[in-house]
Image (cartoon, rainbow, N blue to C red; front, side):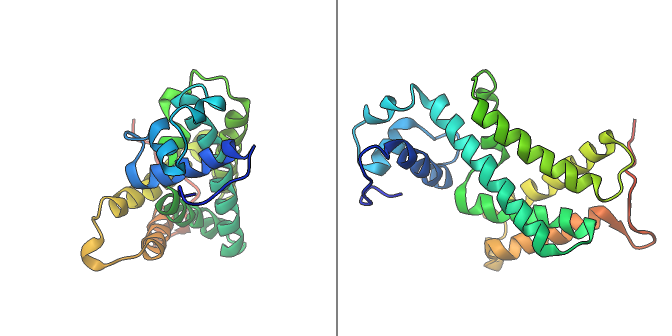
Length: 209
């Protein structure tokens, strides 16, 4: 929501959260501030503090919204991928790339360490639901234990976050690749993690001690 877009009295809290996504997309987490969000909306620097006592509480509300929306995007992408469990899990990588490229709110925002001390039940509910969805998708591929499912989720996150970071850092700019194209590459890379030419979909994860 840009500064010249109006909002009704009483909707400032929602407007602040919406504008926060725009600031994150443009500036990143390190440069995110309450003042920057206020400038984006064209309100006084004091106005946000009527709803959020500090940066952490505003960021926590953004984290909750991002976890909720990312989970919905992952579920939709998995459903669009069909019934094959490996395809459904790999689709989550593409959903992640597309979501973060659009909003700037990746896992570094959703699970920002600075938010851990804050008692925010809404954020905890949505972040827990996000990870549960990922674990359910991983378990459906045939993993033999919870620990294996966790490792598989970590692998999917590494692929998705890696492609997203490279895209946002301009690594693919020489090829004029769009977010959608990079999302498709992330899905293919995720499928490579899940399959081998000899055995097809693998339901085992080799852990090196």
